[in-house]
Image (cartoon, rainbow, N blue to C red; front, side, top):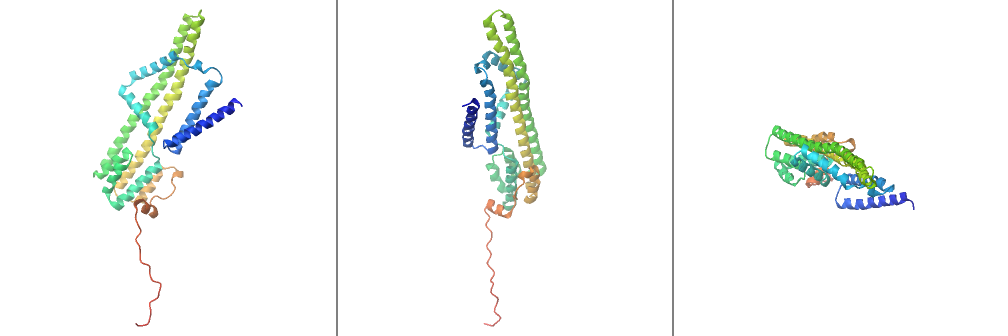
Length: 312
């Protein structure tokens, strides 16, 4: 049995185990595909080191400490410790919570618009406590508290702006780390070369210093392009998705506050969606009855018998 057959079977086994684990974590299908693709790429990346040569050659504690210590030390000089703590929370949130899709938000908002017309504005108060979206909960709270449309729009736009500013700061930290890591990899290489020149006539010195010179550069490049830059891109992508949802919520809340037509709101919000997501009608009579448990009024059947022309 060839090595490629074994590698293929191992990858299939990892995929099956990963699918079971991610289903147990209640992730969406798109997120499961993302994680499975990531695991496959990591396996292929590591296999390139393991197939030809001894994997122990790529591990060097001295080089790792030089790159990691230098990178985080320079980052702490550039940014406050509080900003690094915020970055940690952002990364943990990005990989532990799921962002709703735009079509899910549109459906929720159209339902709220219909409920506003059927049951009044105060009926939205219970939805504000039940929703898991912080921005939507705050928007509904402003509306139930009786703020004017101009005030609600100003509040929500301000919150969107500073949300974007905070996320850009976290992304800036990761971009800075991605720039610093290769430089400290070069520092480790210089350290190894200096030690090599100092003991050029000693075989043991050469064997201990050459790995530091080479692996430190490897660590710096891998950390920059496989850790820090991808994390920064993930923060940017998630921020763009959440800003889109916040824009949808802001426009919808202003229409709901003015008691606008739910059908008009649906047509407006669907302009935010891709053409493939604009399927079905959210304000159909059947769907409204099922969503709010509205029973149709029963009418008495009209008799088909003709009235008699004879006198009783």
